[in-house]
Length: 174
Image (cartoon, rainbow, N blue to C red; front, side, top):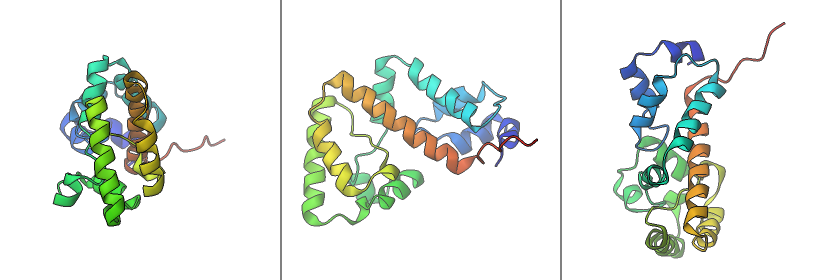
């Protein structure tokens, strides 16, 4: 859909379409709708990012807590959102070997024990090897650093999800 179509969406339709741009956070889409009209896809994305940036640290942690464990129970039970399933499968997380799955589960638990929110990475920009490496490395961060890193990953996910929903800005025509 193009940006004009986005701007014409009712509150309900906008929420239904964009409600999972930020994983399981339809309230963010509801708030973003109020900023219409958007001049472009970039402007729409900026409003999502600005909303996230304006949240207190507890709100940012809340966004991170809405994300599922990578290659975790939700993937195994088939209860991931459609978007998360596609993203995790694309990174190969649905086809981990036994040793990789055990390592992922162990690191996910260590990470959650340390930070009190799940590890978030833009799976579409990584493969399983890099995800495991980053999960291991990021377990060593300070909480404030890791919260900020996780939020930047959320924004990458948001960017790609928005690109999948809205046509790119058309180049200026002379």
